Length: 476
Ligand code: GLN
Image (tube, rainbow, N blue to C red):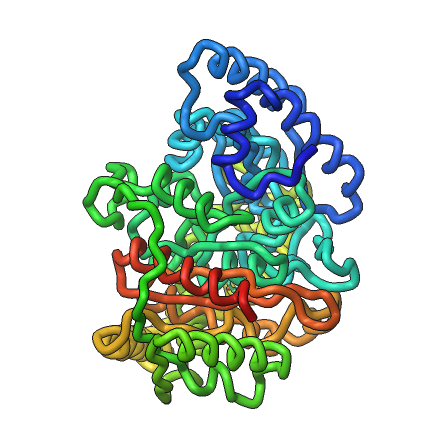
């Protein structure tokens, strides 16, 4: 089977009869079987995908197939798909089945996408390595001793190792972009409110966004367009119709703002720094303007992110009480012990740590010192980000400060793991769209990702400039 990197190529072959949806599903199912040791999938919906493939092959013949005919998608295990299991990789939701589908799932189905299974992730999307899953870690297909990134690690590896054409992830502080960077893919965190969160198992609602992971920019744009647009089920959405993106055009003169510490800072690995410097030199040579800026708020970003997201998580996860659905301890004897034992046994260590941190920062004694202060700093980070973007078209920075790190390397040190989010949380704190663009491999053959951020609602500009970056990366 050809290694398709664009949906448009699949469609061309589908409509000329060179390939069928059934062939495609069989190909991915074979890869899933051969690569099961990577542990990217928690469940594979093989028979159902084959049935749907046959149905869509019929539509192709009849000439009424949707825009995603032939597109096989893997779903992160925190997205609801009616009558299918969803667990957020947590024991607390073991056996739970969705009663309705996420809006994004419905919109993709309406265009004839085929869902092939649900992918492993960090429990409740809390993590940066996919080592926090109740169902085991995921291995990076580029080097199986390395993590794939997290929390959408299974979604990244599913695409990287061709077990699905593309996938969906969720990004609260980098969970789409960071695994995309570690696995050599495109990954988009859209503007907050562009894509409905209805049917996403919430982690931190004022940060969470759903987005695509794909081999090509073109597919990233198409999937975004199909998923975006107002939805009455999600009150935090921008009340606008889905943008119709124009054909991508690499702009001829762009003003880039580069955060100095994100390139020259001491935590930035030599290979990442070199990639950025080569890219910047090539952009300047082509007549683009690159100016460096200092961002004194950088050191506050990760702490502010963790104060606010743990606070929101402690509230969002209170619904998992052992009462209404999901796991209930067999050792409980009364109401109180049902809550305590179900939660103690059902949640993993990282989730419990965050619930406790979040409960602490929201407690009446600590609220002003932590939660309220962090809200204020969040606003300042947003204002400063806006100021930089008022004088530039895009912020350019690496997605991560290193390529994929080793399995077990940071697992025992939560602070080191949290620092892996240093370069991705700004977009979530400020609500801006940001994309990770694959920038080739380092000497160890591990992928590196370059990140771009534009103003809120400026996805078209983000995609156009991404095309320029991809073109330029291909020349260095
Ligand atoms: N690594 C970050 C965290 O653990 C980001 C997770 C995410 O974006 N879901 O919170």
